[in-house]
Image (cartoon, rainbow, N blue to C red; front, top):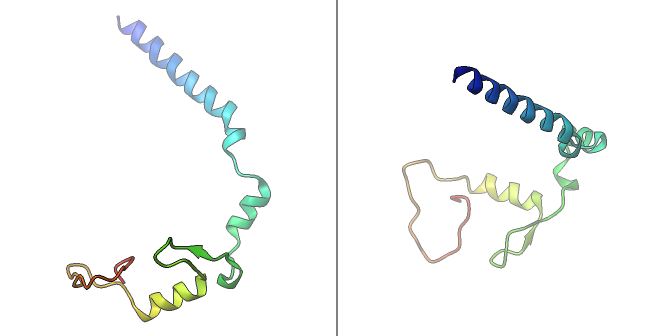
Length: 90
């Protein structure tokens, strides 16, 4: 009984590792994309962010500026619901 269980688990592990090795090619990033991901990008070059119908499209520079001017509330405090749309606790 123990021998069959050991053979089953070894076969299952070999199959999982074999499939992982074969399919890694499809999951790996291209070298150019990986190099770009490792290089910091200035926020001015980032595309605008769509925040939905309530806010529309906003530049990253405006989002950072808003965050600096309106930091999130400390944990344990809640803002009063005044009927305005708010995001991120700002």
